[in-house]
Length: 173
Image 1 (tube, rainbow, N blue to C red):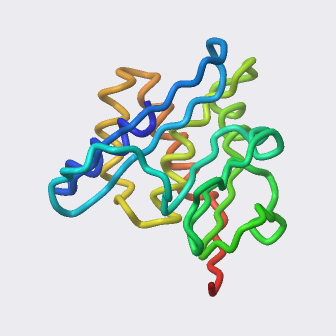
Image 2 (image 1 turned 180 degrees about the vertical axis):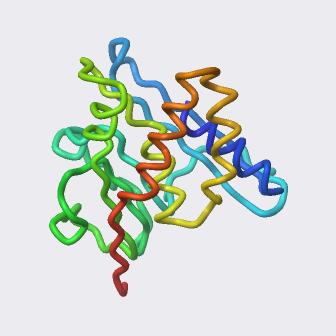
């Protein structure tokens, strides 16, 4: 869902995007990898993405269980749902930018305690601020279309808080 909202925001700015979901054989609710190819011109490639420029990790436990940086380009970008500061995070690769935001805390604040926190829209706001790939304002309508009514307003607020609270550290690589 998050990649689709981000893609719609990119389209509204005249950019192009291609979403490539990869579902494993895990149980429902297991981790899912989604690639998003972004460009200023039409995208003709339809193969997988093996060396992404950046990663977004919605679940703070995933980096402890999986190698989230597999294939990530040297000098890539990581945006993480993490309570630590970017300076405290070491993913074992040289990154040009690392950003962290407590998306789980924001989710709990806005949506209450849940078995699985709703962190996707918070992370979209953080991604917008950390990368500048899309303007925050461009995220609002796609979020509201995806989540109509009061839920949409809450998700826009989650994205806004992610945008405001993300901590970003640039590194020379």
